[in-house]
Image (cartoon, one colour):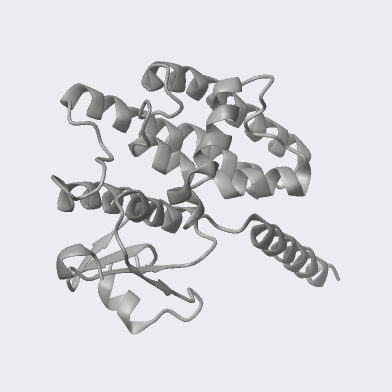
Length: 238
């Protein structure tokens, strides 16, 4: 139960970075919530009725009302729980700075995470190398964004965690899992020192640690998925 008797329930799956965005927002706002683990292979009636359009997670249920899509949930929590005693603001109060935060979130979504996802979907080594090259180029640009947005602080929000930090922070477990699996370092301190420092600073925060996905569990999941893909491919060979 959230403060003031307001009920918050989050429908999600443990490995989803999109669900983690909502969990991080809830944690940094200091809100207690019920975490409901969904099996997307056998979706619950609650999920299907709460998100009849996309039928996927995350879904936040606040006092019986459903809010869908991770970015919308993060912004909703910031607006619904604002003012004195409501936890720190996620988005800046200044309209210009708020627009800049949304710009960099869109960049992370469209230019970094989208290409990084394609690395794992690539069918050839050449495709994988090309998508990784584009991902690292986006990371380099994001390094510049952090330098400007942080204003000398440790986070995109300056001295405090903000909207960009939460969105990028949800990828932190997968950044570590990817390095453990393949040795690929997305935030290499030699190339993007600010992002490398940010990675450590964000992960060390109590609010992040309270909800952060276990990296070892992610590694085991990735290995299992890889083995299933190999087995499925072998079955197709006559």
